[in-house]
Length: 383
Image (cartoon, rainbow, N blue to C red; front, side, top):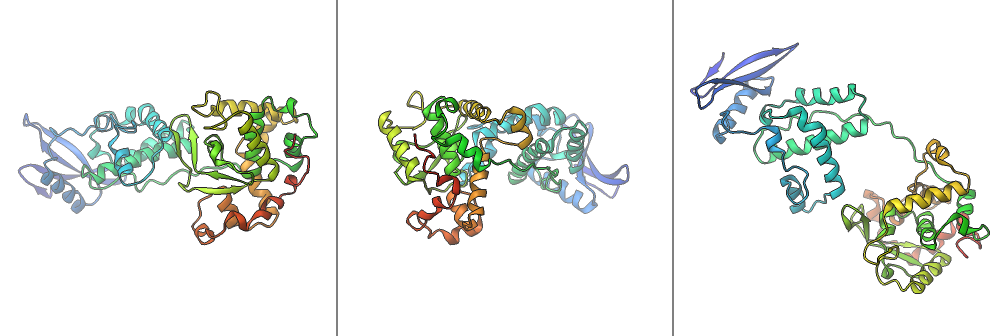
């Protein structure tokens, strides 16, 4: 033993081929207790113990069990970490917090239980991740778990509970992302052209319009559901908010407001729909208070696809989803030669370069809607 004080002593302990330094300390009953510093260097271990000593956190009597420390984590309105971020101007979605809370309760807390958070090392964290991997847990879920862990230990470091975040050195798992499928021009024409029997494909005018907007503007579903009557003109849509059932109305994904050009045909149909239904709030609403649920949109979307020959198996094989409208719109504009930064400006993708093109306004790009051939069909979007 190289150092001993009245309060603690430091000693090495070999774990397989790696040496970690531990320290002993006496509890209130005078019983010697042993705890890991999580350090592999003696001087780092000594610094760790001295820091705990200065803060009065050296003794076992000061409880920082993992479960006790994280009992309120990721509970919106209660979680200190979420409040910490919100007070500094960062966003934190309620749906994301709910997801992290679920992972905390189902996976993270049961593993660490009442282990003192100050003694949890990178090795211990990595053991959890590898254990989950051996159980065939998906890479995305593993990375979500790691993100939650990093948030917990990062906050513990910021508040002085620990000196270093043991999760910092753990690399995320590689995710094999499958490319999102897109629609052909023929499929889009089948879905929206007036020459087809629209009543057989779209059960309601509302669903027809929701999908038409997605196909011809690249708006995200949440942005479409957040549209109000005052967001629409005959030639454009003002995209200011997004909507989901967990958080309600919120900012767009990038936090920026944008103006999206639309065809005259779509503008007329939207304005007529608003006028005929006397819409004064959310355009796509049943009760007039809140937008319709995402699941209702998906149901009608899948039904429409089945009517033009894209069944469930085909959707799965091609990786087609509602978001495919957005990918298709991007692809068609790129194929038409529209500058990528202009496309980012229209679709609301975040990019460092976009700011350089912020001078592009709606009146500078009326030709954009004519760049996409399937939008030029005279019978498209007219009924």
